[in-house]
Image (cartoon, rainbow, N blue to C red):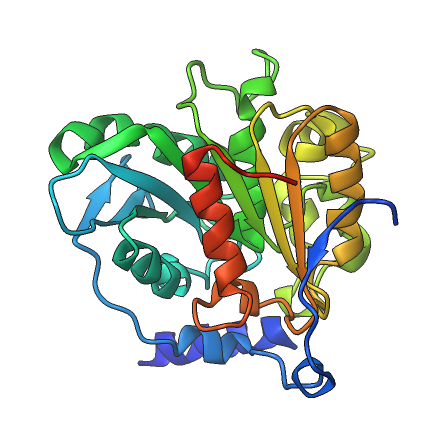
Length: 312
């Protein structure tokens, strides 16, 4: 109980123009509504996964697999949770979204990974975990009826950053500490309010994270380890070669919309297919909630990526 209270307390602290984009047009009353807090996000009900399965040796090397009814083969969405890449976060925060997608006929693989202040967390371990967890679908597919030709990666906040990195990792040099050969091909990526540019995130790190988490993740500054920032940031590895959907709240006070707009311009100039959706009513945590007004846009983006029909 004490551990849970400390976790909630830490997460409560976390809550403390040329790119074309589609956007909702809310009423003035909707635009002034109170924003969803992290405590409210964590309080959303969710069910237990069908399976909790290891993809490695560490206690954090596991994923929660949820399967829709029927024999399959099922399309798959890999989900990465947020939480400043910190040890107080967990896959439970993405479980309501996983439930909603599974009810919609999509298998979900919600990934846990080594986080900051855990052994092996940060550079390079967190990135290696993200890639390894996605590639582990190859081992899961035969037994659980997964369609590996229809895999989309999605993540919220810190998890959105990891999802973008997974989409970009085929661009890594073979000399990189986070390079691994033969990454599982994906149909696309959905970034829910997660930075695509680690150096660009530095001026706006949320105070609730409790530290300079970007420098902690990278193990140094952009000046001291520039190659790490380049190899972890989707914007420096363009073109990614897969379709991308970025979904943001215009009222996000954690990860600035300007980062998403700048990335969208750069990605399109590099030849990538990118959709940027901005919900005028949403803040940072709405994009992780299947009960928020932005959810239909998220669901539509995922469906379009799985079907290969995403348009900017």
